[in-house]
Image 1: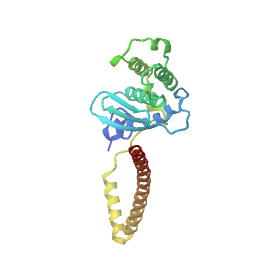
Image 2 (image 1 turned 90 degrees about the vertical axis):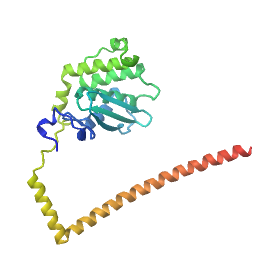
Image 3 (image 1 turned 180 degrees about the horizontal axis):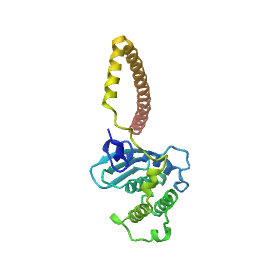
Image 4 (image 1 turned 45 degrees about the vertical axis):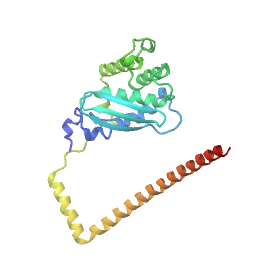
Length: 241
């Protein structure tokens, strides 16, 4: 169990994999970024799905599947909060742009506008668009560095931790005596027969869950089966012509 006294400055793999990093719920920021006016995500679709991964490094990496609108975030335990937040914003801008845009001018302009709107940063778009390229010859990466420096200068990390919506603090460590008391209570329920009722309700809920999954899988299989038949008929027609 994470010690709450260090949760605001520490980084823990189990929390990172849920989107919690250095006292901030990054899932809240994902939703907030998607609603930015500058993001232009006005198609009423839900925000991109994000897979959070923890790494024992001091860096943050991201990858966006723009067609599927899915993001993978690899967060190093020694990285700064500003670094993680900026990379998340960068990848979300990818998902809001056309998949062929990559790191072009439209992407750069939207990234700058979103950073300005989200954090109130003083960013000069004209200067940034003519700045020297950054890593791998990409101007967008040079813009990333400027945004991160501006976020650190503005104290964005501390502001996010103070934000009631974005702030995250894990529950206090569990009292071992409390665990023992609950175990004794459960054992008494089982001994009285009430545990059978609890087990039956849980089993019924699990059965309903897997029946829903099975129905969804059958539907998908039916759809792909129909596609296979379609292409097989087309191939048969070409072979007979």
